[in-house]
Image 1 (tube, rainbow, N blue to C red):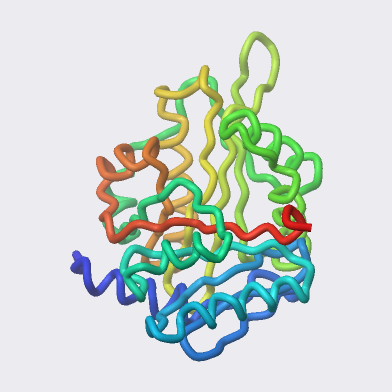
Image 2 (tube, rainbow, N blue to C red):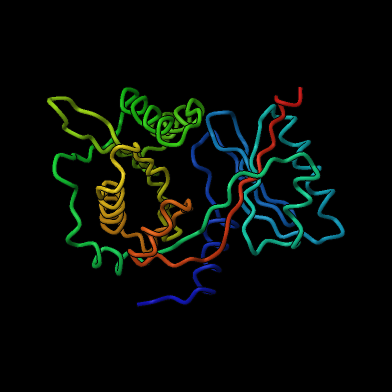
Length: 271
């Protein structure tokens, strides 16, 4: 079965964005005209997951979101998809003091097809894939993330640990461990979000240490997570792909749907 581009994009919008469920009991999903957002303490992701705004009122809606999260004392993200309206939303967010990050590519694969294509994919020699369930494992995930991406992973670590504690059925976290010169070395960290009732699971992370890239570690983690998701009855796998992972995923059969650009608003940086 192959679902066409427009149908897949509509499914993402309806199930993953407008119909999103909260990631932990501490989070709240809030809807208002043209907006769906998640709010909560620092242990959850705060931000706008869907927007469809009329140009005449867009700036007022943006200002209201800034006030909302300021009242919570939370920085937040506005995740802008390439087909979101108005067409100049990115410029409006920048004018409202949001900071854009590097664009990503939204990619989706049908799990039935993907698991068949990757049936023979196994972890490379000397690599063990290990599920993370405790604080020590999360600390290793954060360390790999920071080295692979060059960004601070403190807040990410808190979010992962909170979700594993409060909603363990919605998150799978894995490390690729290299058995190297008599030592165990974490070389890649990845997460899979499970969204019950949507048919979708999502791949996140996948950061691999530079010395271990090009050896099939990331591909093995994609295959491993795909098998888990398919076994749990999910139909689709989505990835917000970087320029580095996009070519790998395209070769595996993931379809390119649109771009995504995270726009960050940091209240604390503005005093």
